[in-house]
Image (cartoon, rainbow, N blue to C red; front, side):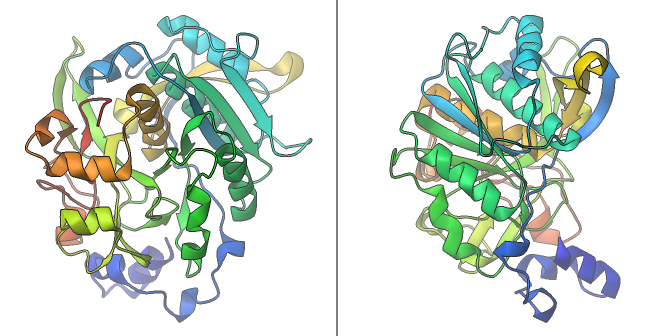
Length: 379
């Protein structure tokens, strides 16, 4: 984030100021045309013959999610092309006993926003993570991968607009983000679907620690922060705390939405608080992903263990497909209810920086893990 770099260089301002700093003259020229989406995915292990990390069954047990189910279509928005994604998904599904999701059986569709799209290794890893784990969490839902030509703001929004135009899509996953910009508010309408007004949009909050990113900062988007999830050797839940990389804070440009004002988030000062919810993001407690690298006879597939808040966006989108009820308004209303412990695991330990209140996990709501991590698919 520009603010983080600026304050680090000055060496005299607290990180608490970072959260509220308005756009200064150094950022005045930064606009949507400069925006580039970055996938916050972190590789913990790569090139493995066998998978390591948490299995779909372990994740579902930890978050009280059903083993089967899902309705509608989950749209995955990423940049560049992954020509082997359908094959890689098949390998993943076979490994974990997940029902096959192919173009032939109508479960998987890839829509390229241009006839010719280059491949990028970093984005290919992101695509594999998003597609494989969205399908693993909601195996009965369909998967639509929409590939933007590049990660520019304009190309990513074109891809989002395509997904939003389809009435079968119930959730749109955006496992990427970038610096906020002064005119971002004028682009927030892209996260509202006329084809299906009940469609939800989900984005990663970022992996740089304290600080806001867009589109997670949009009041029309569910922003997903990160945690460290610890399980026993038998796969039982042990603990969950804030992950130091989790993005979060207060938007410099987006006003506080009604669902947050009603919840009365402390110290938001009338602006949009981020994130809304959280999910496992620590690469050390990460997710196995199968990815093929190279083309033709030189192509080789292998297992990788990855993390980052990019893992949470597709899986929260899958939770929407499982329960059909997760919306921003419902999430805050459920956390405020007397039955909140049945909806969220309140994350009360850990931090994502040194900005005191804004960087520490705490009861009810915090600027690192939001309302908490899921304990159900029905909100």
